[in-house]
Image 1: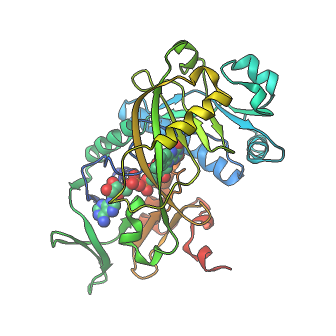
Image 2 (image 1 turned 135 degrees about the vertical axis):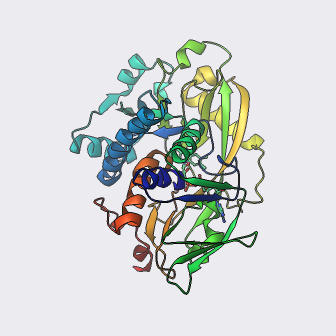
Length: 364
Ligand SMILES: Cc1cc2nc3c(=O)[nH]c(=O)nc-3n(C[C@H](O)[C@H](O)[C@H](O)COP(=O)(O)OP(=O)(O)OC[C@H]3O[C@@H](n4cnc5c(N)ncnc54)[C@H](O)[C@@H]3O)c2cc1C
C-alpha cells in the first residue's frame, strides 16, 4: 500500500521517501507471495466498484512497468445454500451491469469437470477472476517508485511518528534518525498494532497457512486455460490453477490463530495439509494425491468488520493511517494508493471512503 501510494505521489512531483524495516519485498509482509486473488465478485457493490477501478489501475501499471501483473482465469464461487455470499456476489455484479453467470451444478460439471458437483448446489462464475502476480507486482512497484524519484530506505524500523514543534511531522527511527516531512503515511500491515497503539484493541493479526501443490496426473486439466480460481467459503478453501513452477496454490480464508508477526511459526501444520486433502477428496477428487511443492505462512491484519482503515491519525496532524486490509486488500492496492495520494496532496478524494473511517469504531 505504501509503494502504491509512493508511485502515485512521485508521479505528481511530490518528494517521497519510503522507509521499511526490511528489504522490500518483505518476506514476512502481507503482500509477499507469488500470487493473490483478483475478483470483482463481492457481495457489496461498494467493493465491486472499488475492484473495477483497481483492475484498470493494475492494467495501467502493467503498461507503465512493461511487466505482466495480472493473468485472467475467471473465478468460480462454489455455492451451497441460498441466499448466501455467492448469490449476493451474483446480485452485486449484475446490479453493476457486470458479467456473471449463475450455473447449476450440471452446468459447472460441463464446463469444469474437475469438480465433484455432487458436493455442491450451484456455482457463480465471475469472469474477472484473475491471478495477481503479487511478488512480481511489488518488485515492479519498487522499480516504478524509484524511477519516478522516490527515495527508498530499507532495513530501518520506524518507532514513532509525531508532530514536531514546527508543525511538521517527525518520523523517528530505531537507529535514532528523525526525518522531518510535511505529511506521513503509515502503511505498516500486520505490524500496525505496534506502531499505532491506539488501534491495538481494534486490529487482530492471524496466522494463515498456504500450500503450493503439484498434481501428479492430468496436469493439463489444472492449467489456467482449463481451470478457474475457485472459492468455497463454507470450508474457507480457495485455490488457483497451476501458475508457479508447475504448482497450484491453495489457502484458507477462515481466520487462523492470533500471532505476533515477529514471532510466528513458519511451518505449515500437518493438520492443515490433512484438511486440504479432505477438501480435495470431496470437491476436486483428482487432486487428492497432490504432491506438496512449497508451503508458506502469512499474517492477516484484521479489523472487526473486515473493512479497511484509511483515515487521518487522531493524535498526529498530517499523518495518514492506511491499514487493516483484513486478508483481502492486495487487489485494491493501486486504488488505495491513489486514494492515499489524493488525501496527502489535497486533503480530499473523489472516492467515498466513509467505510474506511476510524469514527466507525466509536459507533455502538
Ligand atoms: C495468506 C494471505 C493471503 C492473502 N490473499 C489475498 C488475496 O488473494 N487477494 C487479496 O486481494 N488480498 C489478499 N491478502 C491480503 C493482502 O495481501 C493484504 O491486504 C495486503 O498485502 C496488505 O498490504 P500492506 O501494504 O498493508 O501490508 P504489508 O504488505 O505487510 O506491508 C507493510 C510493510 O510495512 C513495513 N513495516 C511495518 N512496520 C514497520 C515499521 N515500524 N517501520 C518500518 N517499516 C515497517 C513492513 O516491513 C512491510 O514491508 C492476503 C493476505 C495473506 C496474509
